[in-house]
Length: 154
Image (tube, rainbow, N blue to C red; front, side):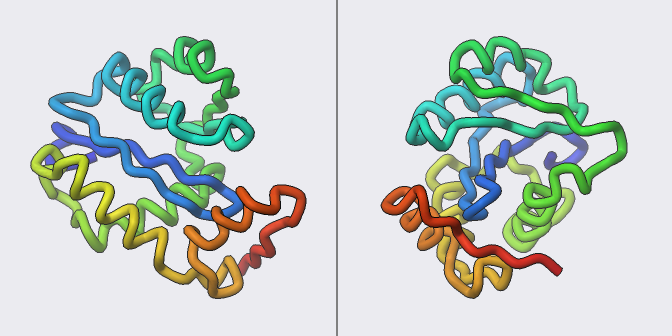
């Protein structure tokens, strides 16, 4: 959420690879806008990667049933005040603060700028991935789906 909750960017983060997609929400972040933008972004992904989405309790996902129907993706909601239930996304949002500090008007950033930021994040080595990048981990997942990505915690 941006300045005074008037603007927003949706983040989609693949848990195994930490690969990040930033979804531009033009004008508003109503449930209908979020639905349409998420469905469009999700449909660009290989079908075997689209399994589940974990969301917080925001009203912007009130159209979750329609998203599930359009993408065949199960959607789960975290318990209230339990951000650790979507830790990978919370960590990614923290990284995004380096590009978009609190109070930033997110509506001024174009889809092209969001793609630049996502590309930079996806090409940044992660300790949790054994110092490879999310882009490399995603490439490995797509080329060798049976071979697990070794991720560490802590």
